[in-house]
Amino acid sequence: MPTDETAGPAGRPHLPEDPSPGLVIFLNGTSSSGKSSIARALAAQLDDPCFHLPVDAFHAMRSQPELAPDRLPDVLRRTWLGYHRAVAGMAAAGNTVIVDHVLSEPWRLWDCVALFRPQDVVLVGVHCPLPELERRERARGDRPPGLAARQYTRVHAHGLYDLECDTGSTGPDECARTIKDFLSDRPTPTAFERLAALGPDAR
Image (tube, rainbow, N blue to C red; front, top):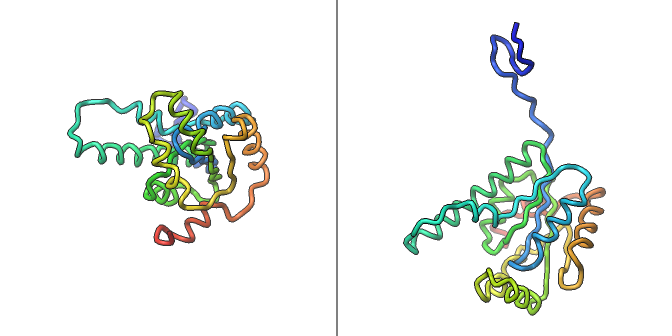
């Protein structure tokens, strides 16, 4: 008889049953739009444990060897691809995951649509007026000048959201409360379900 409660027949490990899928709260906006501030406020407000997985953290984990300029795009792309799969894995294990993302390249969105359970994603558009983005960018000093402006017309080009907020007029705590309230009565189909039905060739 095995003595370890996790052991199964013939001493083999007893694997846990597959959990119910978790929720992905997907914040999309330009650099400096306030996504991370909203994510931190939301994590503090949610009643159940959750994980804030910012893409910046994944970029920060990557080592920084000298690379030829022509190699960098592939390294960045593989970082994004791995990030998406890490989020999908955490959600598949039953966790609530708060994502802050920059959908400035269409393939990033469609990779996520293919990976995530569309009925379990809340897609939130995080908007901010360009002058305020530029002011924040200058104040931060850790972003290339003009980054937010270059992303401004691209990140929301897909045009579909479950919920939107404007951080130019609303603080992160209030945005987080709006998102939390929305979670209790989410309509269907979700934005991800509608995007999945359209397919990447629709836009």
